Length: 440
Image 1 (tube, one colour):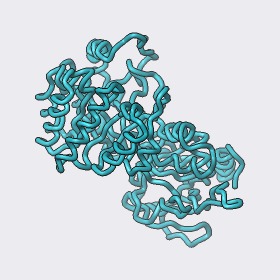
Image 2 (cartoon, rainbow, N blue to C red):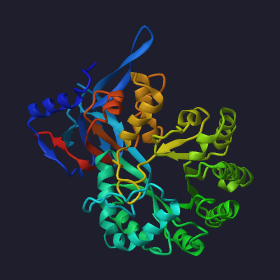
Image 3 (cartoon, one colour):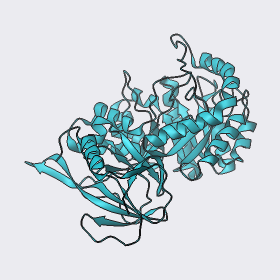
Image 4 (cartoon, rainbow, N blue to C red):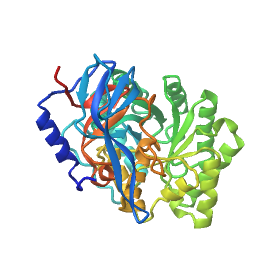
């Protein structure tokens, strides 16, 4: 059991002693990654989990997967190149499942958003109509910059919403696809065609259908009452595009008024009546859930789970807290994302899903070893090194070799301290940071 906050110091000391060459590009296959810290189980005191037991292993990585886990001191396969993790902790790859890669100030000069006080969403849309022509010329490079930021924080999987609007047409999507194609070997990203200016309000049904033919994965939507002014008509149009093209749905629903609750009920009703939509609908933000009574929440969460509907939340700090633990308890899949790193909406995004896990722990879970370790699940698609009983669940032989190395002694420390990631791997490929090449 290490001292709190000493994970990075231990790793640094190991590296200093080794005097090995740091590499930032690793394309060998197969290869060995030695001295990787993996979690083995929980330690208890009077039946209370107080620590996490870890051990060093060598990962044998072949064809993008973990081919073998070699315990410390065991005989290693001969002839394979060896790289050193120097005792750093392996964490499952992070997943940023709600971000806007296509429009950002990131990568340019500092630019704070304009004051939001007194502004409606329609005011923000009007502002965006002026901004988009300024952002489009550099949107490919800025999207690539955001991808690099996410990778540096341990994320190699994302879902990006991409504007489909009368100002940019399909240009934002075309530019995003260029950026993603450049990173197809090191980054996986689903795309949501997002009618940011309103599906009905901006009359983009035709553009949305064109976008569906360009490799988009999800039909987006936005506040059907506040923006489109016709809740049922807007949602019906969104669902119809999805049904006609065989795509999923991921809608921004910020509305907290009774209209937001009504939209929630209408969407669940629609999915219940339409088998082709089951398991294919995500509601992003979903602030209307904060307005439900405990009894209403219980019923709604049960219906969401029964229909395979997902909630994507940025884990907001607000007067009314999102009932995320209750959703998980009822079997609803909950995921998180950055939303904005820096744009005309917000300047506060870090691009770090470990940051989201830390926030989740502070808001909902508490500060003990067990609950800290459980909080990581919201950032990894539910993948945890140890299951709830303390048995190793990840990594296992055959798993995809996508992970990051953190300067931490265990998951609980990594979540609490938002420990630095020193290297990120995607399907066995080093995509960010560096590792040491062993001599010989």
